[in-house]
Every structure is written in structure tokens, then in C-alpha cells.
Length: 369
Image (tube, rainbow, N blue to C red; front, side, top):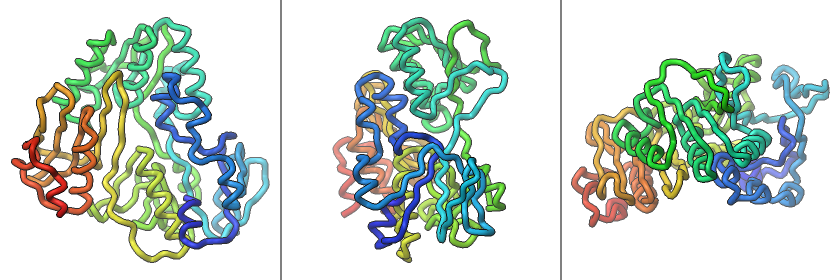
């Protein structure tokens, strides 16, 4: 966010307050390369440490804010200190959804949790995973590649069902089973196991500060297309928000890293005084599982039809999601080019026919011409 502020021409004081003692880092690595050991800790930082000094960013790491201080325009730190502000941006992110019936469960959201989980996996032995979403599937893949016994328990009929649908979800289920994962679907209650248990059943936005301050909250801090909240001079960015998307003409909440990063930058530019609306953004994320790279672009909205380019189940292939003959999302397996081009088509609000989507010989960039 502060990058947008500086690029937008703001030359005043910027203070970054965070409860973690680490410099900001890229969380997607925690369940992917960092957990696997292919991405070292030195490479997960969001920016080099020197940049914070070069751009004049005051860091207050390891400090938890307990009150936004809207009345006096000064946030209150847990130790009682206050930090005055003229404009405030809430970027508290999300927390892992907890299962109170499993008090000893493991969760993966922050770097220390990733370090503990990596040591657990490296020691070998069994691991139970509750939830076959992105965290659960990625951790299962890492653990199996390191030789661990893995049992995954999912409440729905297929992994990632709500986002990818039954066909692509079933394909991923087969992939995991072929690699030795014991996958149980349609599970109705959390299993009791002697093995360590990782819970990956989604996230919840950290809206407590916003709620106490009286800001509008609806499954996230409600913001407009520039990140403005219901209070003057108070903004919010990232996966704590439910932001208005002109592209979808609705408030949406996106939990993935790149959307949070780009929205944060756009909000910073807006705080600096830029009155132009940011460009339409189609949410995008990726997931690495074994030798497969899954990429998805879209907002997880309902669809009524899918179209496949390539041979389904034989990577590379891509699935397009349609609603009333309109392209609203795309998912590709080892097929990032088609995902990237379809994403540009959706952002540009261009019309593409089902025949063009299904035809491997049709270059989607022609639609943008």
C-alpha cells in the first residue's frame, strides 16, 4: 500500500504497524515452496529491507493495535502508546477459521506456523488434514512428496468444489489419490486422530478493530472502489475487505495474495489524491500440487456451464466457466497462457463465443484487438 502512496506523490510520514515481528512477506509461499524447502526464508519477503529505509517507512513491528482511535485520530497500541494519523488504512488481513472441537489442531497462516509444520513434515510420520481447499491440498502434496502418510477429510463431495466445480474437483481428487493420499469426502464431523491434525477450512477476515470503531462490516470491511470505508479518511485494503468491483457490479471479498497486493497499491494511490478509478481487476491465484500448476481467474461466482479447451484430465487443459453465455471465470492445469489471456478478455469486458473458447487453434488475444 505504501508503494502506491509514494508513487502517487505522497511525501509525508508513513507508519506501518504490524503485530508480527517480521517484515511483510508473501504468504502463498508458506504452503508451497517454503514448506517444500525450495523457497528459502530470504526469498519470501515482500520487499527488500533496504526499501523501507529508502522510502522513509517507519516500521512498528511486533505491535498490536487495539483501537483505531477514530475520535482522536490516534491508534492505540496494546502497550498503551498511541500513534497519530491524518489518514488511516486497515490491512489486518484474515485469520484461519478455527474448529473449537479440535483444541490441539495445527493451523497455517503465519511464518512461525509454517516453520513448525515444515519441521513436523520433515520428521516423517502421519498427518491428518481437515479441509481439501487450497491449503489442505497444497500441504497434502508437500507431505506426500516428502514421504509422509497423509489422510485428508473433506466435508464436500470434491476438493475445491465451490470454486472449481465437480468435474475439476474430481480430477484433483484422483490426482491426490494417485499420489497415495487417503482422501475421505462427504465427511460429516471432524475426525479424532492420534496423528497431528492440520485444519484448513477457510479464513475469516480480521474485522474486530473495524467493528469496535463502528465501521460498516459485512463479512469484511465494506469499502468502495477506492478503498474508502464508511468513515472519513479511513481506508481498508486486502482480504479484510469486501470491496466494490465495477467489473462485477457487486461487493466481493477475495482471499488471494495478488488481489490484496494490487488493491493495496490502488488504495495507496487513492489516499495520495489520485481521483481516477483503478483499472478493472479480475482476481487471480495459483496453486502448486505435485507437478501440477493450477491457475484460476475469476471471483468464484455461480456458473451454469463449463467449456473445456484441450483434453480434460490430460494437462495442459483449461476449463472456462460461463453464466448466461458470458465468460466469468477460467481455470487452467499447466496452462497459464490461456488463463492469462482469458483474464484479459474478462477485464476488457469483451465477448467471446463458446466455439472460440473450445477451439485450441483460436488465439484469445484476437478478441482484444
